[in-house]
Length: 439
Image (cartoon, rainbow, N blue to C red):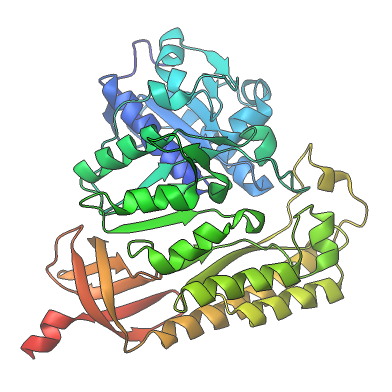
């Protein structure tokens, strides 16, 4: 640990978009304390903001700790934050004595006080909201995350989130509107609403009227300067009629829905405690597409869940074909200590899970490429987010969350009308309409 208080910091986030948001908020918190951001090999303090969904994600943290200990410029103060911190607590410094601070995802607003103490562990889930203690948002990019809901009450048998993030909690309406305005003032053109089950958000508006996520989206739609709204991650059982209708009625709500299903087998879904079946899931997709016919559907899948047979896996492939996902995340099952699935019989052999994952990903690639090719010739708008690899090249996002490569001098945050001209499985290319008009 440095002999003096750290003057510089580096935050490295693993895993989900919620962790990205938390990492940004920790950075803002440390900046407000007068510290400056630095690269990991030079920072006085390195915060590893961790993910505990899969075993490999947790093991990466300990590998990073080892590299920091051996750093040529000297060992920094090391803080482990996030879900691994919450799940393992005091076990972390026992396993890795170089770790100075362990802080859970509901307690990181107390990070400055923990740094001042030098060595500390805080994995409490306090009743008071951490958001009240965090500084006003500052954002320079075109897109920003806004956490509206945390925690999960679903208790899927494979998942640690209810144990590391706690019960479902919705942030208050006024706080969310204020934070959204601050992000817009700081340059954000697009806001993505985040939650472990984001569509479980519930609250009351300024008039005391009960609202669901659709009501919040409609309020954000009225904010000047905001061009796009997205939300993730959704649970099928929380897709309300109002939220489905919003996809067809709110112009700023982008035509993209991430709706995890995990398996195409009803038997496996029941073992996962997913509280939905494939028939209900497919009907839900039909309703969303009726409200917004051009919507892109994304999903999550797990292969090799305990007891999964080849017949169960075939049902997953059939579901993929039935939906035609524009994009999806897929993983082989990873047993997490403390979850019901970890002690289930009929654990699937790793080589079987691997082989199924390869087949699933090959099929998902076919569908993502098919979706992207289907947008060739469409005229749409691209929100420019960053520079491309070559001079004069920009990369942005289409309404369907595709990465779009364009040749343009447009500024970051500018929205450029384009025509999609070519497509691969992971990105598309677009030609600005202004360029076409000049030709």
